[in-house]
Image 1 (cartoon, rainbow, N blue to C red):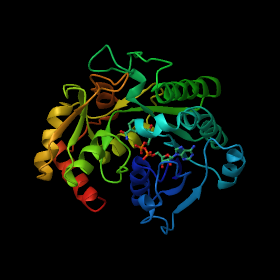
Image 2 (tube, rainbow, N blue to C red; image 1 turned 60 degrees about the vertical axis):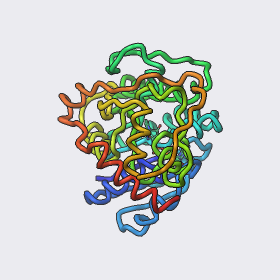
Image 3 (tube, rainbow, N blue to C red; image 1 turned 30 degrees about the vertical axis):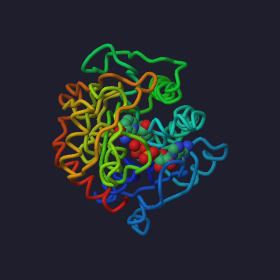
Image 4 (tube, protein in one colour; image 1 turned 120 degrees about the horizontal axis):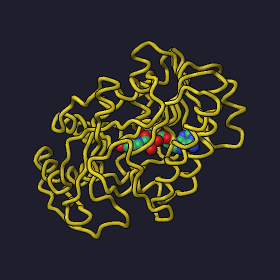
Length: 314
Ligand SMILES: NC(=O)c1ccc[n+]([C@@H]2O[C@H](COP(=O)([O-])OP(=O)(O)OC[C@H]3O[C@@H](n4cnc5c(N)ncnc54)[C@H](O)[C@@H]3O)[C@@H](O)[C@H]2O)c1
């Protein structure tokens, strides 16, 4: 099959590239490197089935350029600033990647009569009042808070995707991705896994925001990629949660990192940022039933792989 992937040089994008090329597909991947890195795909750029382009999915000339790349069977839209540190620093680009870029990728989908999947997020649930979060929950999002540039851009992306499905009959899918981790996360992106690992591996104190009782759940990237591709090829049009339902407090997680890295780092507590969610855990019943999917990689194993990668980076 011929795939188009935005955000190909990012963390998840680079794993999708690896998986799709490994399965023998043809792939056109592009990225504007706003947060991604050439190094993430350096081992793939000479692959005969891979074409990489530097392009901005929200750019004024993007559609004209991308239309010269040919027809696609599947379009995957992963381009977006994804970590709070990045999207708080570049809120307008973030909103553009959910809005203009999503519309552009949907237009390319329509032109090819392709299947389409957009990387949405658990942030659509905001600071949720329901636990765990099911896809039927509409969320508790502050539309004008500092994080709204990300949350609302993804909610808009979901709405635009459903509009293309309803109005044009596009074969769309929406993945609500929960915290995912693994090799090739950017060391400086501020998310809890790279932040703790960088601190642990350099002997700095591990920073916990709040008292550490807030929960997160972490999905290893190979599990996520598997779920994403199953979903892209399904006939499900409404959002589907993909994540690991195993919930852990941030405090416990810090202890786990200390043990696995063998660091002497202490723990330092900082004030909780505005609108930081207290609990985050996916209900993945839908993905289990519909796609026969559930995560397989246990936290310790995924963390060992991730630590090995980060050791080569710090
Ligand atoms: N990693 C997670 O835990 C997680 C959770 C929920 C949702 N997601 C979503 O998955 C996708 C990938 O996230 P990631 O963690 O790999 O982040 P990432 O920052 O590593 O990757 C995103 C990539 O998109 C590129 N990009 C951004 N805007 C672009 C544009 N306008 N044109 C072209 N390229 C652009 C960036 O340069 C980067 O390479 C994002 O849409 C993100 O919102 C990720």
